[in-house]
Amino acid sequence: MERLLGILLAPLYLAVNGYILWRFLAWLAACAPALGRRPVRACLGVSYFLLCATPLAGFLLPAGPVQRAVKLAGNIWLGCLLYILLFLAAGDLTALAVRR
Image 1 (spheres, rainbow, N blue to C red):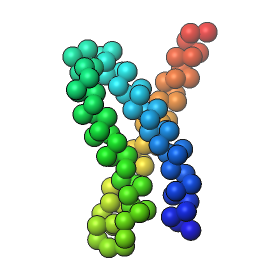
Image 2: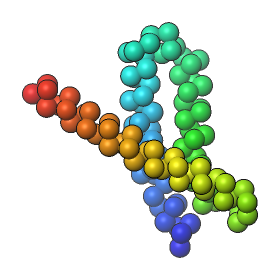
Image 3: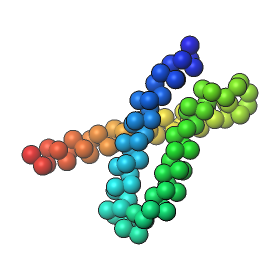
Image 4: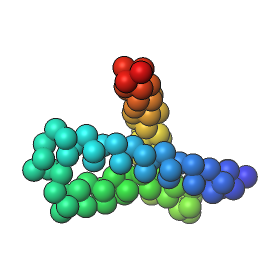
């Protein structure tokens, strides 16, 4: 049942991570134009994708010490993801209120 829930929620999880990556790369290009170049963006995108894949990999790996380590890393990432998403939502709502 746990694997099925993970598979069903994977598209939502990937969409949220795509939004966060998109906002991060836009912020990075605005703050440091040299870091907004294509190779740097590609490296950051791949690194972010690998980090985002840890919770999904934790569901798909067979039981054992590797799965426990990947699940631990994934749980830490999910905690960070929650706070990142809350700060992004607060910032987007604030920007929307300021524009109006």
